Image (cartoon, rainbow, N blue to C red; front, top):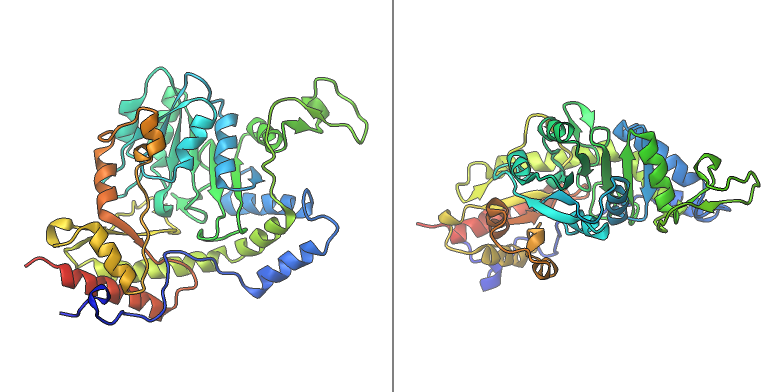
Length: 398
């Protein structure tokens, strides 16, 4: 048996690789430099061009780009009308922002459990949680796999709920042939550097509803409008604008938009490479009883953001922490996504307690994310596979 690096053995590789990383090429740099040299580096033409490109990519009628994915969720929650006394059902396995956006509006997040095989929100859990106070659902495309739109859409239509899709992981994914971004009432994207495409930071909301779109535009810019139809005291002077509600400064700069425009042209290439790596991992790990492979629903043509390595701890002599540390020692550095949101100490102060979502809690104890991004070479991928197999063999029972 090969000795693990953490116990004095030789690591699988000399230099570390991490779970995610951006890919910035010369044409991306050129696009940013060109915009920086232009007369408008914010509130300029690149933002509008990016919004048009996102409509093309997602199939949505309207897109509003913002400073980051959290801003996108916040504005979507405001546009949905969430407020004091409302309840909003949220995926339990997600980044905190998916639930925080509900709190920002004064409403209360209610956490739904996940399906044990896909790790996405469980529609049966959602149905059990609906009360007369329920106003909407924030459903997360975890790892990039689309949520079950058919079932969730039917629930929302029957109950009069707003469906916000948190697609921070899912740019490029399709559900029954339709791009994510064109299906839910509103869809939110993130363009953080570890995502499939990046603007350095950045986010977007897509929708097919014109009224929602106009409100999102106002909310993005302080609640101010130049549209006379939206004004209380309309004035046709070129300089005139009017604040008609309380909004925020969530604008994206033009040089961020330029970078993201360039990156979106590469989405097919970046997405295809991620799929290749997922297939390599699945083939390598599918016959290992120590590991569990995430199930993908046939309706989802997934551009994967994360590859989840789930441990079958009954077949191992180690804990998740020990397996994680051993992989780190081999210089194939994992991460964990995510602690169930309601187990964060801030949410404990709000009265949430362990035991709300048993499947989510079990999932958290058994998982880690291994490297998955466009820039991984075939050799890098083989190193990750070797490291996982090395650690699994060391801790294998029997």
